[in-house]
Length: 211
Image (cartoon, helix red, strand yellow):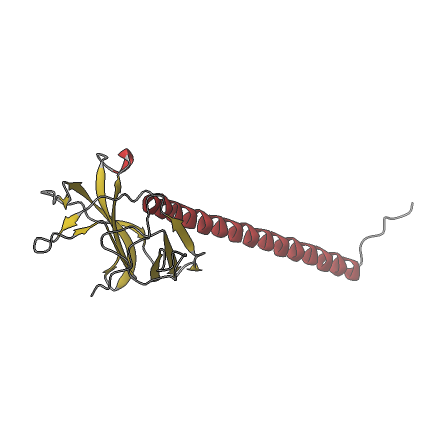
């Protein structure tokens, strides 16, 4: 009878090396696939976050109306739109999902909480050209909580009736034609520049220098 020939030590070692190499390759492939999925999810979350904030800002700013939210008691001058580099105030109808509806002051601004900057929006009811202070004011709603920089600019017509240059400030008695918003965050870096056209903006009044 012929005896079955067993594996030699070299063959066993070679098989072990090949198995280890195959497992290492499979593990590397799995890690690469996992990293790709993670990057895809992070990019998706980043894009969704930008879309949500920019969509909210676009809708709110574009809905700005020619309604006064404050009146100077000494001069009688009304304020319908006050635009600054890091703060913007105007009146627009508030959607029902945000409150009781009707014309409300929209105050979009940068504030600081525990040493960190964030972009917020606050609302106040407007009646007869004045902002009504509620008994229990609602705290500002955070839009971006890891803000690094915010820059807003405004544009209307120049003296020749052509589209003018971007201005750092605008107001208070007329709406501009366009508002530009630039946002930079710690997590996402610089966002795409947002430019909003105001349907009710006249852009006729020259920007007023404000302190």
